[in-house]
Each structure stands twice: as C-alpha cells, then as structure tokens.
Image (cartoon, rainbow over all chains, first blue to last red):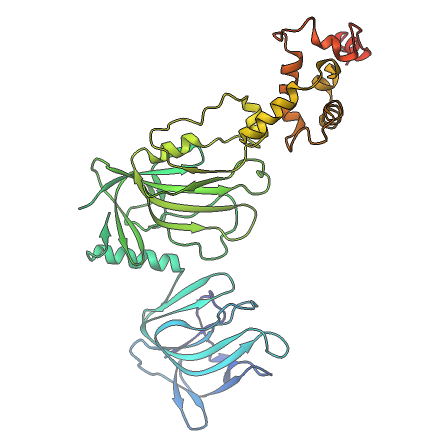
Length: 172
Length: 268
C-alpha cells in the first residue's frame, strides 16, 4: 500500500517519504504528546516502496515491501484545523476507512479547549469521508488510483446530477 | 409532467434574462460579504458554461437540477439576488423579498461575515413575478432598505403625491415626510434667509432652520442638504402667491444684503 498524509483538513493528500537523505525513515508519529493529548509512534521496518500495517499486542508496525493490495492505501489523516472553540474536528461520514491507530491533537497548554484526532487508517477503493477545517468542509474520495477532493456543494451537485440521470427526483 | 420555466435573474430593480452557469453549477458570486464558509448549492446542471434560458426543474435529495429544454414557458425560475450593500455603498438601499405562497423556494446560498451580505434564492414563480418585484424597488441613495412582496396587478413603483426628494430623504416614510412638510409650511417666510437656504452648507442651513423654527428636531433625521431645496421651493418660489418677492424678506423689508449684492455682482 502507498502511504499518504493529509496534513490538515482541506489539504491535498501527499505521498509520505519512506526515505530521507538516503536513509530509511524509522517511524511516524500520530497525534501529539502532552496533557490532554495522545501520541502513537509507528515503527517502519523492512525495505520496499510500499507499506503494510501489522498489528501486534504491543502496537502497530509498518512493514515495507512490494505488496499487491488491490487499490487500498494507508493514510495518516490529521482532522484538526485551526483553533476554534466549538468546531467539530474528526473524520466525519466515513465509509471504507478502517482506523488502525489514532492520536489526539489539542489546543491550549493543558489541552483543555478543543481537540481532534489524527488517524492512521487503511482506505479502501471508493472510500469517502469529510474533514472540517475552521470555516469549510472538504470531502475526500480514494478511487483506488487517486484522491478526489470536493466541496460539499460540488459533491451535492455531482450526486444530484447522477440521480436525475438515473431517473430519480421530482419534476416541477 | 414537466413544467417549462423561463430563467431570470433578479437583482434590485433589474431583471435579466437567463441564469448564469459555470462548471455544472449555478455559481454563487456575491458582490458584498465573504464566502469563507460553505455557501450552499443553488443548483446543478448538465448544461455547458453560459446562460440557461428555458429549463425543466428537477428536485432530488441533494438539491436542484436544471435541464435545458425548448418549450413554451409556463412559469419563471428566478434567481433572486438579495443584498445589503457593503462599505462604500451603505447609503444605497438593501434589497430583500418577502416570499409568499405564490413561489416555491428551491435553494439558497448566503455570505458569512464581511462588509454587507447577500442571500441568493432560487424560486419557481408565476410568470411576471420577477418584473413585479423589480418594478416596486426604489434604487435611490438614502431611500432606505426595502423588503418587497409580490403584488399581482401592481406594476410600477408605488405612486405618491409627495415630493420625491422628501420621500428619499425620509427613506420612503410618507408620515414623517408629511410632518416635515407641515413644519416647513409653518416657518415664518420673513425670517427664512434666502442666502443661507440657497448658498450655505449643511451646518448653517441646519442651524438656521432649527433656530427660526424653534425645533431642535426640525429635520427629523433627514440630511439638511437633501430637503433644503424643498424649503426654498415653498418659501422662495416665484409661483408662491405672496405680496412681493419673498427673497427680499430675507433681511427684512426691501433691503438688499451685502451677500445678495456680491452674488449679483458675480463676486460670491
């Protein structure tokens, strides 16, 4: 599986580098450490251009290799936008998304204001979910080959057209 | 059964044929306010970029779909662009519509924050609805915001026998305009200074008329510059049936003031 990172709500998914300056990346972190927060460290072992997640009693390990995964991918999804006291930060209306490990990102020194999650997840082809940034929402869809990002309006427009083309709806 | 709609765009006193389409949507592109939040979907369409003319309208859970057609319209599909002007245009009237049972609201999109605001509403309405609304809107500076409702059979702006400058000055409030007319009529013509009324600025006009009327609220919120012309018309009009030239009363009797003399000599 390819390993993607969505660094903040609204941003385009980018492939995570498994090697930096000729050396393999030893681990990735999900969430952050501190009071009111939680952080998960995921070690990366092996060689190869893709990864697969393996769960053990002690935690999750990413194993590099050349895997054939039928269009699935792994994604580190940061669902937390800019500071807002009440905005709901999380992975909303998810379909085809299986969380492997999650951490917590929070605001304020003691993490007592708003918070949200950062997740390492396996994403199936056709999976969709919505992330809220401070002001807007963005829908993400993984086709098995690429990511498609849509605003709620664009998504509604596409779905509405599909329904009418299939004979649905009420004519005025 | 599909009803053919003719597409119209209504903004204030303007009705344009067609509804603009871009990227398969009726775009929300307001002049005022901010669109930093998700604004709402007005409608989607399989039509290419451009303008929709005649359409069939379908409603699904996700929203409104507009499908172009070529039949005789039985109704109007109106994109109503309601607005409150932003900075730089605050003295211009806001435009809002009171939607009655004659229309069906299909969708809407709004700004959020910023200077001024806009809410666009897509409605299915009877033929002539948009023109009826537009014909009632008075788009004049200082007239005041208006919320307009559909009045069948009423075409054209509301007729009033009151002077239009007073209606504008008092933001369309006929009652206050009539009160002001009564106050002006009660002013002693012999104390109204021709020079001040015709030539001075806002502050002097205000001070002078408040002084001779004895009423600190003589203007009742109106801009003195907006209504001083009416005062002059009433007290210095040539048609006014008075015994002599009223302007000569400005300094009392038939004496000519220094200001009048200078003005006549082209020196002022």
